[in-house]
Length: 81
Image (cartoon, rainbow, N blue to C red; front, side, top):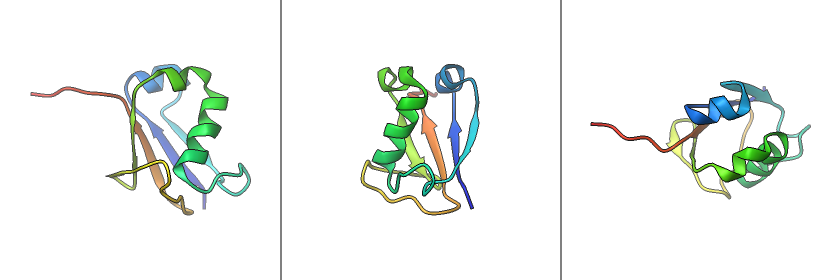
């Protein structure tokens, strides 16, 4: 089962998509740091943008592992009121 990657806001504009399906083993990443590296190679401008990442709707850190079926959301800064 693939990992679903979601992009929001300005990150959708940068990547020209709001969703990707990736195979972690085929793309050789096992954690969030590896996914970030992979995505920054696909979308070089991503490294210049601020964002937070959530795995399965919980904020995550670089070393957090990825598993089949995970949903990974890339969230730009936002403000609300």
